[in-house]
Length: 69
Image (cartoon, rainbow, N blue to C red; front, top):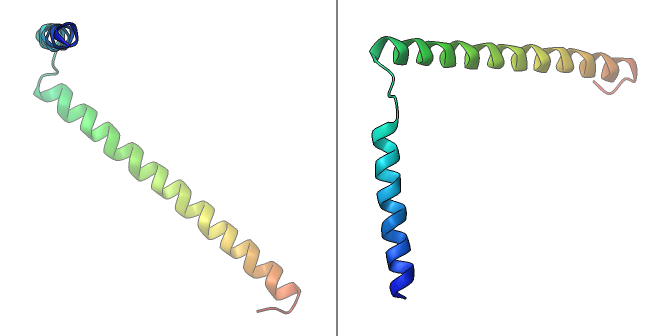
């Protein structure tokens, strides 16, 4: 039990040490990365929307051909 507690404490200490070694982004880098993520999400949403509209058009056409619509 004591060994597990000691190992847990060492793990937490190593995590804290690693956090001090991290190079954190400055404000312009953070803004740029955020903008890239937002633009990428919008682009993916547009691609999914176009695919949805195309598949809807295709399925409606097939349904009209077979008289189901």
